[in-house]
Length: 221
Image (cartoon, rainbow, N blue to C red):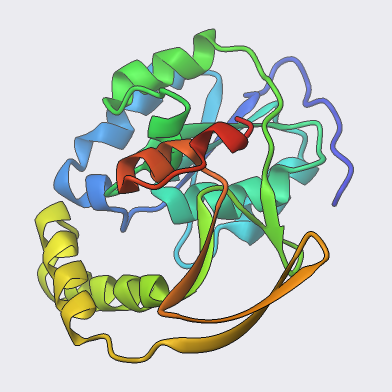
């Protein structure tokens, strides 16, 4: 991780890293502009396509005090990976389709209110998960769930990023999925062999609640 230094007092201290292709950005193209009007003159805006890591890494190296991930959960996780362990603080402007992480930390979903909350907020530590050195904030999984996500992205690419389409794509994938996995699992020194359609590892208590799954109380915010 690059060391960051404090930016000069006469320059912006907030870097907003935005995904112009996120769900809310397409449905409400004025949301980002509204948030930037709240941030300015303290903020600069940088767009990315694909992985936000390079843009976030540069913002950390330049010493921005707050780095705002403006997009969905994928954008937030990509920026969080670069911000972890640095002197920069991560903030979230929820412009995605589901915004699980933002909703889990009670961030307003309306852009102006979210920007105001960022300016008024104070940094605090959260727990994150890692897989092969990469940060995740909601979950990691193999099997059925990532297959659902792949189908969802294919539908998005064809028809647009709408929640109802995501639900329909999920139902279609579940009905067609016929490939349980044989797995050897090791947990707390115990090994277990099982057949299952997926393994789902969650970091988000909010997402577990939304999915109707147990275990939210075991997760630290």
